[in-house]
Length: 204
Image 1 (cartoon, rainbow, N blue to C red):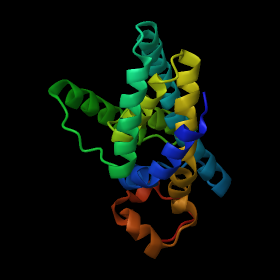
Image 2 (cartoon, rainbow, N blue to C red):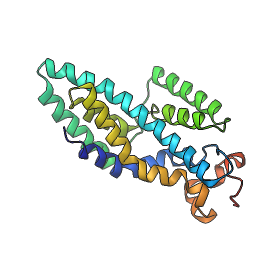
Image 3 (tube, one colour):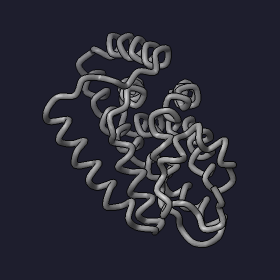
């Protein structure tokens, strides 16, 4: 299975990720007192996101395997293709959430709130893991694509490729606090970022 379409979905759709998760990425707690430690913490956050995407890929790859056994793979591929095109074209994620989904989101946000009070690489990795489970139309579209892999390994590879596609822009945004100027940062709601999360060497 070719993985470049998954990478392109992530790369092109990462502008959507920047709009939805950019403020969260900028507000990540700092790690260490050096620029290298700060950037490493941001890398841990993004690694956590990609790990979650891989787990989702395993689930949807397994689901796709079931569809293939049932002889429905052709129809699944057609539907997945349509969903992906629609998601990339519209970059929408404002789907209505049911009560059970809202409870799960509440739990995820509570977990994120606790982790944001910590300044460790493990906490940043965990923030990325939880972030990957937050509702996102682009991720749903990538999961639809992962079902066409028809295997667990193929689903994991597809979603990891998708995550790597989102990495350049999301990593850039998450390190802007380290290198960015205040006027540029304001475009990403910098003024709403808690003072305690800013690196010590950064002067607003």
